[in-house]
Each structure stands twice: as structure tokens, then as C-alpha cells.
Image (cartoon, rainbow, N blue to C red; front, side):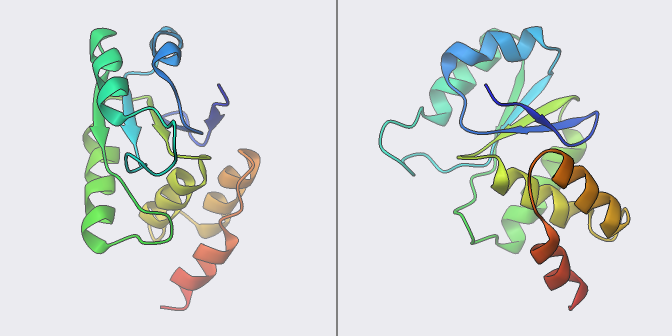
Length: 138
């Protein structure tokens, strides 16, 4: 697994498998959010299988599937709600972790300084400068 901590409460990861769920629970995570639609790629583990394994480990799970590059206002609202309401710390996953990081950056814009958002994402290996520039131009 490639876990990348964004904040004390929010970590992102590329696609996880059922075999990873116990390790996620043992690492102290209390919830898992999937930001990847099922069937995005052949051989991808379905959300249902991840959710079943996570629930068996006592984790809360939520799916907020986002097609890459197509964030709707409704999906962003669902993401914000999950980020606020789900038990912490939370692990969010998608294909590479980028989508989860971009969603977090958008959700935090206007709440914390963009420089802090950019720093935290960069420390985890993600560049959110482009999306922050777009948000600042609105």
C-alpha cells in the first residue's frame, strides 16, 4: 500500500484491495472513502468487496465515485459531507490518489490558505497548484 498523509485526519491512497483492509484498520483508520467508480479499469477491486471487508473490520465506509476530471457540484457536496461526518482518521482511495487529493483541495479552498493546501498536497507527492489557480480565478 502507498498511504500518503495529507492531514492527521485525511490520508489518500491508490486503489486498495481486500487484503489491505485489515492493515488499514490496524493502522488506526476509522473510515474508508472510495472516490473511484466501479469498472474504471479491468481487474479493479469493486467498492462492494472493499466495503464488505472494511465493515467486517469495524470501519465505516462511503463511496463518492468521481469520474476523473468530472467533478459535479453534487459530488463535491457529497465529498464534503463525508469528509465532515465520517469517523477520523479517514483513508480515501482512487486510482492513484490524485483525485482524492484534488477533491480535498477543492473542499478546503476558502477554509484554509491555498499555500497550506498546496504544501500539504506537495508533501504527499501531489500537485494541486493548477486547480487552486482555477479556483482563485472564479
